Length: 289
Image (cartoon, rainbow, N blue to C red; front, side, top):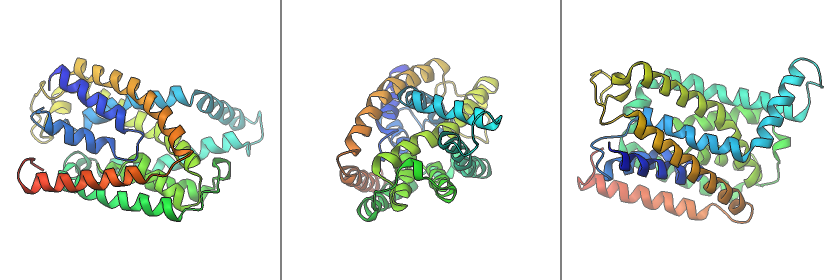
């Protein structure tokens, strides 16, 4: 992968991370189409997601600092333990547990089997339909302040589905929120806050592995342990991460304004169209799964 291709993938990551269309699927697909020579890899994808999560941190800075501050104050008894912000902090922690556990249990499949473009195409269409149903039947009355412990777990389970490219982290969690009756903006806000621990944890872990074991982290075949610096390069990855941050910050601002007034139907249509096109490209041999 050269520097320009890395920047293109960073742009794709920034454009798609916060939209319910699956950024990992788009990075996977575009990586094939632009001629990087292979799947950019789960490690590269996880690391450039640090850029988009940094955008979440900047956009929701007041929310994040308030939640963390109140959580610590409640933890040490300085404010009531049932403080709404402190409680939300605990719910984000609880909601992050499923993806951590499942991510560790299925790490090999996540880095290999689940990245098959046949699976990506299927998930794009399937979860596009689920998002459409959720947007149609959800009552859209609950606010984030009404989040329950049970719903926090359900949100967490929905987020863990995003371990499979094509599902979409935001799409899966927003769909779950809509089905549980939350407003579009509330479902999206909690979805983005919930993603922060998991994405930062995964990205920093992959970054650590890439620095400590660059040959293994960059290998196209996890079993081969072969050095392939053309696939994983620190400078290229940094550039892609910076682009993902800048573009992601603009997209998240647009998305939060958009969903306050409009439905998810355009994203549903787009997901299904991309899934169908991907099936055609795979079936005709234009792309290799």
